[in-house]
Image 1 (tube, rainbow over the protein chains, first blue to last red):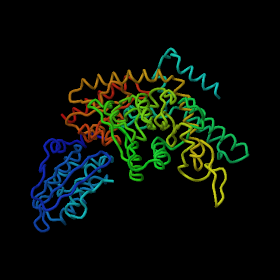
Image 2 (cartoon, rainbow over the protein chains, first blue to last red):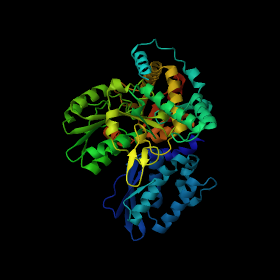
Image 3 (cartoon, helix red, strand yellow):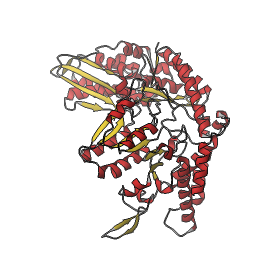
Image 4 (cartoon, rainbow over the protein chains, first blue to last red):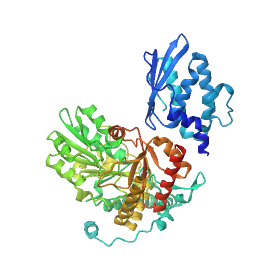
Length: 147
Length: 424
């Protein structure tokens, strides 16, 4: 297990200076995510234009993996429609959980999360923001949990 | 039996010279410590979550399972009698370990959590009603919060919480103010799992008894670190788990004063807890079996007894002195690392060291320590109100046991420097 693979520079940078951090006001939808194992919480806010995510922000307290993943996610999904976001999450999920997944160009900076798959205990840290975003987009559930 | 009891308490009260403590020799009794983790020697600093087992315990369990096992209290055949002897012998071993008056006061349960739930449902629930209060402290483990919340929902009683200060010490005057004639039960940790604070249990018990309240002590974190004498403490209930005392998982003990236990209804119904059953009326068994429905964890009890033999062989005072030495060293060493804040700085602590490192989430810290072979607990330690009080989501917690050495503290310090390197 290589720590440098997990804590790549991109991850450390987005942890230190998370992009799109803070509440989005006004927003069309938001959801809260919770990882009861480590106590991490984060909220994702979206502003929609039809099916398209016009703006997205997040706030919360979490580990470097969860903070960086949320930061990278907000950059990646801004401007995309729900279907494209769903497809992107499927790619990210594959990257986090499948040993042989090769990150395609469509992942962009999200490819930095590849090292997480060597640390199974941390996969939920990286996926919490995506589940929370999905909940916000569904506007059904207001709190999601990794458990 | 009475003679053994008085001899034991005489030994306990005489200050024997502390035997020399050799942690390196202790380590040889724990095969798991020879393991490597991520190519590094295992540095196990998570005994407060669960301790490891010495060969003496592993062998006692194996010996029982290999040569002695049958069901207890049931058969006339030789094995059943031998198993019953082993199981009831373990109960007597526990009685001596905690200095209970009688084995009728020693109930085998699954662990501390079950012990607390048993008292909550069998002692508290039938007795409490609206206007009654249960008093706990702000540093309790969830297992000493939630069972009481459930009783409050069931009975209309109210849960009161005595506050702590920033060092993690109980504000005793505030505790006294919350103690009123309405207080029926006081439930406190002997040692805080998240902060290491040792609570003044004897003073708590005396004050509670003055108000006519019954006291339950959650001894999960205290039992491995020092000798516990339930009669000297004067508590009404004391409960602990085997697996934090170098014994097997799935077994623990609830001590209760006989008068209280005798007046309590059974908690679970089934075999072994009855004398006679007809469809019209069932007569419950005597203590302690009244509270032990179903086939018990026999090998677990045997293992727990072996663990008690083992630690008493080392000497509880010697263990306490050894662990205090490690705690003092680790507290000083971690204090020298920039950005480290120790959470829980009570004047009297057990070998539990909770801390945070500025700019690094405990979860990341735990992962990096793990790659160095250093096992610590990270998270809220099942004490979320404690984390809320300190305004943090989580801490990292290093906890020390009989097999830890100064080298383990050095490894922890070196690994923490590695964390700072990664996150610089």
